[in-house]
Length: 85
Image (cartoon, rainbow, N blue to C red):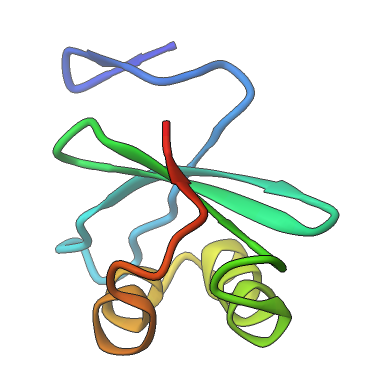
């Protein structure tokens, strides 16, 4: 899949970006984690291990709504991710 000239992993779902100004491009939800791909091209894994279940479940909810995910990450999660992919 190509969006705006950049490739997105076929498993990842394009982020709704209802406000139109998000830094998030796509996401992939798993049982105990979420992967987030940013406009910069970097992808991060956030899991129950790090930053924890409460944050991950909130991020999943925001991702599915297509609003607020980038803001939530920058305000509450920052560099507290499990891995950079």
